[in-house]
Length: 146
Image (cartoon, rainbow, N blue to C red):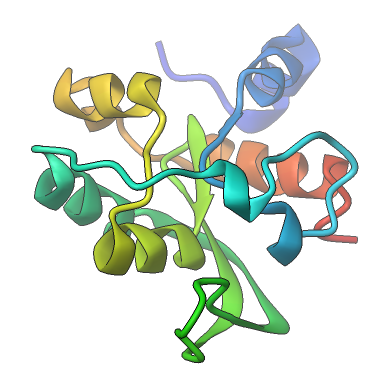
């Protein structure tokens, strides 16, 4: 049975889905979030045999927000400008373009739950407008979007 967004909101399911949104790879030095996120130095180098599959998945996320906040790489000796922060989602997870940059260039560690999620084909769930709205609400709750 297909439900409209208003039916889901009225049933309370929308709030349940928003509360289940998971953030991936947010870095304190790049964000102004009101919750706990890791400092950049807390991320570690990690060789992941599934790096290519993970990158492909991350790059196909749906863009939900773009900021004018220009950021530079935090790696010593890397003065590259990453660009404005771009937020992506699949409706269950939310991540940024700088996570993609750091994974691609420096093999930054990725949450094991997310790796299992991508490899477990759970990621094939249909992306719909409700999931996009859930991700936008998450960014607003984290004080990233106003």
